[in-house]
Image (cartoon, rainbow, N blue to C red; front, top):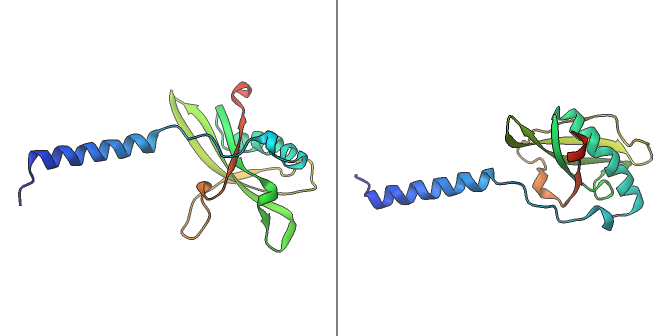
Length: 140
């Protein structure tokens, strides 16, 4: 069965639009850090640089993180598990890397390391929760 030229042009346009939307810059998170309680603000200001460091991103622009108080670990209410998305520039391209950060509410800093996050079926993904943006562009 032969496809018409109009159909092929339409298919190419749809594919290009999909690629462009997938490559667009991440939108701003739904929550502002100033709207959070003091404990969440303190923890996020410490978690974001750790996530950026462990993402091995040289030119971090910003880090979007879930709010720790919204993500206590079931059965371990003194601990949390959040995902952070590190946005960075590499070889002139805008990139992002998702990191998982597990820590304790009462520790200062709340954690020592974040780890690369790989999405698996039935696991949370970054877009499953509201995030807060922390600008790290001045940190290099």
